[in-house]
Image 1 (cartoon, rainbow, N blue to C red):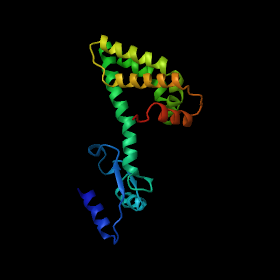
Image 2 (image 1 turned 45 degrees about the horizontal axis):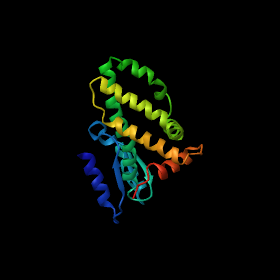
Image 3 (image 1 turned 90 degrees about the vertical axis):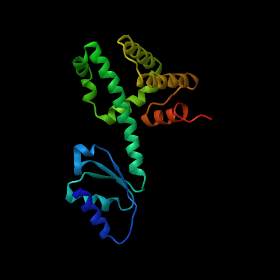
Image 4 (image 1 turned 60 degrees about the vertical axis):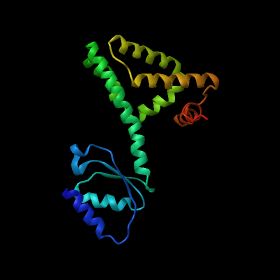
Length: 193
């Protein structure tokens, strides 16, 4: 509460009212005043300066209000999607008595920088989508054999299947991450009439 009151007092001292978008990207109950924040807008730097003496973690992410909220939701696509798959993966591994071994098998992923991993996944997704869809189907069947009902994995399988169908109709010929993103945006993830 003292943190919020001090921030409100400092803002009230200003003469002009400016809109700055602020998005919380961590657990406030764990981080308190150090919980990471994203800020965007013309006075985002001012907001960042307000938090510095209080030990706040504030990152300026854009010049337009709304950029911070948009980035938080983009982050959520990855973090919440990963969380859902982690739930299915670890529960299945536990059912099979392979949880500790799984962590050892995933070590290579743990050692790869996230940007490198994500861009590699997107770049190789299209040409390998049919084979990878089959692997996802096998993983889904393994969950079912262990008495579990996959929820996130069928959506993953559907994405790979949609990509494989689109690639069969109009083959992707690019090699870069940017080309893969553009192709996926127009052939797989584009809204349909």
